[in-house]
Length: 307
Ligand code: ZN
View 1 (tube, rainbow, N blue to C red):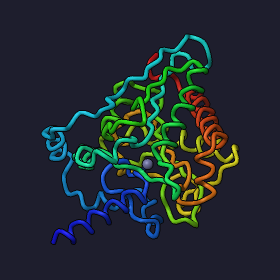
View 2 (cartoon, rainbow, N blue to C red; view 1 turned 90 degrees about the horizontal axis):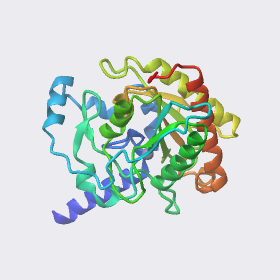
View 3 (cartoon, rainbow, N blue to C red; view 1 turned 30 degrees about the horizontal axis):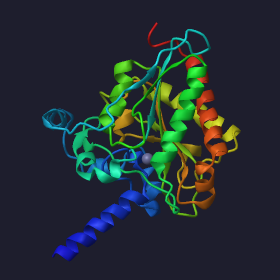
């Protein structure tokens, strides 16, 4: 019996590591053989969630959630008043956290993800060589923050290191909401079948009561992000449809942002070429530069949310 339980635990861990938490919390999306089906707006784990919006909200409120070791947000640098993005606020969410691996109970705590319950967070994926997704997410976030601040933006990161755990997905989205940010950019990398490669940009699909006001501007930001990444030489994912853009309704980070939001899956860490790109300083810089260009273009076309 104990042996069986151990095997199950190991199997669950392998699944958790193999797929990215672009599902951002809870059970990651299915293994690569079924990822095509997941690229539709409704992800499978939502079908097993029978809670209504009202009951899940109650449940979320009742949840006693442990406090992350890296409470957000902490990294706020006021804009200097100059630059094209002066007066604008951007929230950058480096997906997962480096310490999530050793805080299984905490990251499995259920939270509201936009009218349904989902686990606080997941561990994220890794390359076959052991380079963790959280390392890429953090490096990309730091580089993007630097570029946006240089353009005058106020930047808030949802976590301030890659060594703690959390915050939960509802807090990640909530940080953008509370800041009334002009945009939220969540940075991830995926774990798909080794033969698949490329990036995809996830935008929030329609979730009544949650994403109503952000579907359209988020779609614009997603298109800009896809286009700047292609211009930088990156390839849209071979394993999802939509030309590198996928709408999803199961991601708490996006559902609760309340501001224009996108989540980047920058590449497939299980693919050798993508893994090399994602680990390289040049690759990280190119991705950060493309993201910064997309955000700058988006904000230039939309009036400030904080006039
Ligand atoms: Zn992820």
